[in-house]
Image (cartoon, rainbow, N blue to C red; front, side, top):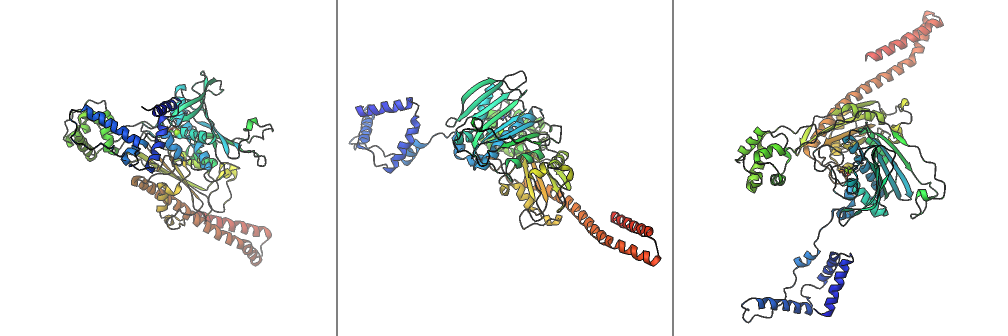
Length: 633
Ligand SMILES: Nc1ncnc2c1ncn2[C@@H]1O[C@H](COP(=O)(O)OP(=O)(O)O)[C@@H](O)[C@H]1O
Ligand SMILES: [Mg+2]
């Protein structure tokens, strides 16, 4: 090796040792290569190639006669590309594609962060059988930087798990089970922390306590995005007055704006679909004139006295019972795909195909398992791992040809009509409420259930007086008769605030002919009117259109169920509206006739020579008659 080459090698070694990854350098070098196409192999390289070839040929017994001096094959495009091919860590992927996780703009980032933390808090509380109390605090730190603090009274998280839960993507407890829950992918909260880290450099701060006699664990965490592994900045044991629970603090670049798609709307919608939860919420904004520069010190370090803290807004729970605990189920054979079946066959601990079918799936009894084997012409005692590709295909076909019971439904925990109405009445001011729960159904082997509710506020009616400045008035005006209805979409009790147009719930609502039910509707759009319409899909696996979990995919079975539910609600609404129209008409007539009552009484008085007392009597009697006629209509 020449001295310069030696030096280079040494340098490269040093770089690697110094922590600058060798593979970081490679792609750049390779990237430069295509500028000089394959023919541009340097002389030195050629010579090196020749040397190697010579020594190779020397090793073989027979050198090829009168062989032309060997020339190194030019590098193929595939070889050049091979140098650039390497692992992509899931964190790097989502860092680049943060819009997939709901972090595409600063306003949405704030909402997504709150949503992910609140979803986790509610999931954890319900799983532990605790009535949830969740505090949501937003603190504006600079013009476009916020600190989000979510505290719950849940079961807490054991120390060893905290770093992975909050600083490793695709790590969670819900992905591998078939049971209804808000979270499913194991991305949510760690992605929020990663976004915070990327935009502000501040670590996610976690406090968690698992029991009254335990110490609380305090962590400051960052994600090593290259490895998708947690990096612990601080690890401490602290005193925390709370008996158990978790507190998550994330600082991120964000903007806050009231109104539609805001944190306020999200929490209110959450309170409707989760009437068993108490939310406490406050937002501390910087005083408008004194907004410091972006790099100004944080609130607590400021020398000016802190501004008066706003009061907590409380969404009080309307129900004291927790929803029924959904049970975990095994996959239903009709929802399984061939590749998945092959994988299960390879990994199972079952001794034979018959017991494999019985133990790995729901709704397959021992007798049905035997039936499937016979249908697939398979020996029931054959080892699952030995079932060859062809056999697994015939097994797959046999499974789908066998009639099976629908999957068990205790894996779902629907809100229920009573609770839905309680939530809606608590938060939306209206004159008519109704709810429909569809029977459970199945898409791709996954059980699901659709629930619907509506609140109709008659135009021109004053707001319910007893409600005072309730949550309904704070944030949630019913639309007017000339506006499109307000559609509240939910999946596993989580409000979906974005991508309304892409969601199959919206498509189903647009597909119903609302004119049949007394509402006006521009062609192919949402109907118009002072109506709040709520649609909830409960499922063990909600088919979201993307990881940001904002819209439901359009499976036919789901669309059909929503449509049937909407039609049922529509019929009930139309009965209410026509009764209301009749009442209004009768009222109008009565008011009109009442105008003439005093004149009639006066006329009678004059004709019959009655006194004032009799005149008053006549007026009262006529009015009572009118009232009675109204009641009879
Ligand atoms: N507040 C919390 N209390 C208890 N456990 C939590 C809490 N937040 C998160 N976890 C645990 O961390 C896991 C990962 O959360 P996340 O990244 O949001 O994924 P997912 O909710 O989709 O499973 C959850 O599955 C849950 O087991
Ligand atoms: Mg989650």
